[in-house]
Image (tube, rainbow, N blue to C red):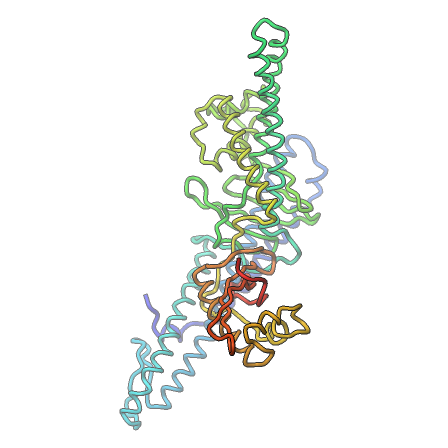
Length: 515
């Protein structure tokens, strides 16, 4: 439903700012509590089974507090943006009313129309000429007000828990791994895990081959047969470890953002539900990612993946599920044993990524064989990513399409067109008629703004990397020749950054010719 001018005038930016201040205070309190739990002496000095259970509960509490802090920051950010926009819109509306009054017109607060003011002495034709431009300005104010209204509604919904909270746009207060760095660590860990799985699979295959070649009743057959349970156990363990390594290549491109502790994002589960991954950075530099879809905590230290802990939601109990039995059997463990439960979670996670839930009805041998295939495939993909030096599917944050890309003229006057500062790039532009003069810089600013705006709107760009400052992208631009080179074009690659607030800025006017 479209807002009326009367409703816009009744808005109070001050009331909305109170929401911002309250949410900011709540975020700080939640973060302080989370940091306090992380430093409790009991977490390092207490041992035993009860301690392990307590530590898991405290970990969940700490992660919940950290997530709550991020949620409160998101509410605060939404409220701040809405309050700022309310002030701007109301100021623009007041100026519009003054301009209308100057020509004998007024704004109908209920119909959102510019009308003749009763008793005005201005000429009718003069008034009619001024109505269209004033109406156009009014329509723009109302349209923007409706967007602000959506922001307000979203902030209220996030505050009362009826809407999902996106990752906050604020950059981390200290350096944290970004999504590309985390996926790089995952790929390195997966390559190593795939090697361990292949070694275990080959050992099992060799033992079974020995049994087949020598046949029952021979010493070789008996020795190999005795080794089969152990080798299956080792293969199952290797598969479970591989299954515990996360894969962030399926992150939702519109969800990636940066909070106080690092990157946050969402992804789709096989059943269509959305899962959220939230970062928490500990004081020792360890980064923990809480994945509510897998009920798992992934740990990273010094740029390396160091392990996964699947959180139990209660005591591990016996179950008749075939996959659970298939996993625990090669370990020689009962279903209620903790190690068997961990292996179950690892393999279940591995198969879920490949949508292989049908394996719950499979035998142990089927699980091991299919699991080996899955790990081999993931290992090959990870190796390809590492060899290329890039991680595929790095996701970009949401883009603010209400503003044009920002192109600083100095990128040309002091860099691209300057022989002293451009490292030879000025020769490229010079060859197409662009000199180091204001006219050339102005022409390039216009071309880059228009072409990049169209490409970015169509999402026709290549993501290069993501860090705490934003997502860096490459945009292809057709550089038109001027002067003697008029009518010619060169296809070039330019560099841009999508900042956490959604704005897009030019970083590199020329990084090479389009392949």
